[in-house]
Image 1 (cartoon, rainbow over the protein chains, first blue to last red):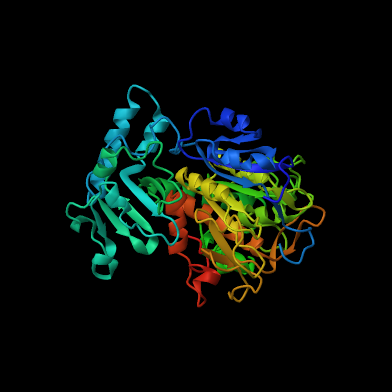
Image 2 (image 1 turned 60 degrees about the vertical axis):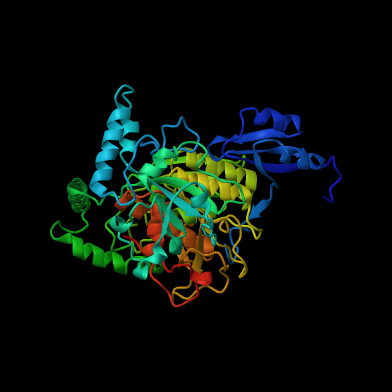
Length: 81
Length: 454
């Protein structure tokens, strides 16, 4: 990672289907500030320091930790949308 | 609404509770077994809804492999004796000629069928069988559902509906009742947009009635005069009101769910005109949004059992695991996510590049692939250039171009198929592909071809 460890980043945490019950607390302990729990699809979104990403990936029941990205479809009068 | 099996409920989902017999069990035997299963589970709990759902599963399980992945002995490692459709002449398998096989591989479509007995022995269909680790070639295992042709009741209701519409039209002074069906179809063919005509929408008697269609976009002009009286469920995930001050969302909803016959000289542009519209605002009025908000919108649409989820959204990134997982969960719960491939004349963007999400390419009006349309992971296509649909007041209607406009054509047609067949999730996906009109272009440009209405 090029980021300094304390730069906050928005992250998407995808859980395994059989993630253990305490996974949310362990994610919080590993540095995730939980913002949204998407129960139907097994995903937790939130923020953490860039330096905590590797630790979040090690939490049992976590399938993937990805950086949030921005989608942009352009202005209303864009030629293509 | 009927409940769909979920991957994490109390084990009541799927078909683990009873056998649908061997692979070659005939449909009547499976139906009988399903009814017995439903009766056994329904009694005592009094859960009529659950019992009804249970009767929709055949007891067999459908294994879907990741795109391009082959079984490579995975089923054998699970202790299953697998037959391969390629061992039969022309891959035409007679289900009663399979001997003692537990599973049948259908490599052409990346699917295997597991017999009811073998599935029951392994308690498939309960939590833990829906998703696999990243090394596994298996995308998902889900219950097989019965597909019912529309019966007499449906025919009767359609006749009733037609009569009511005729009376309504008559009262409003639009033509006289009589043998209207053919005339009406002819008139509609003349009065529909090129995209609808190419996908044979005007000829379809289906309306999307009873089907929930979610459109995740910039919102909707909730007061648009052509949508007055349409029940809309809406939610914003971007901290702005749902009201669409951009226009992209209103345009996409117009194509997927717009009205049957806008009065005046406006052509028909809406497909599933009686569907239930779920408006998820995941992009701001300036047209941008974060993946987290988009996933929150997907979660909302899936939790609301929307059979069709249309996402005219894309970013030129590689495959994102979260989207792939959300798409797989959606399919397991009977929700089909359809996304625009993107307009970069490059590789398909995310989320359409996830194998569990249907990717839509754009065609020009002459049915050639649009020059801007992304390529690679393409499943199906529809007209996306110069598409006429609704936009927010005061303009009300206008043209837009892009794979974003092709996507809601497929979503609207998917709602018609969902209504016509009762299919959901992966079986609905497969039906859309199987009925697409082949086009003389590579699959990397147009997928299986032009989407066609039932």
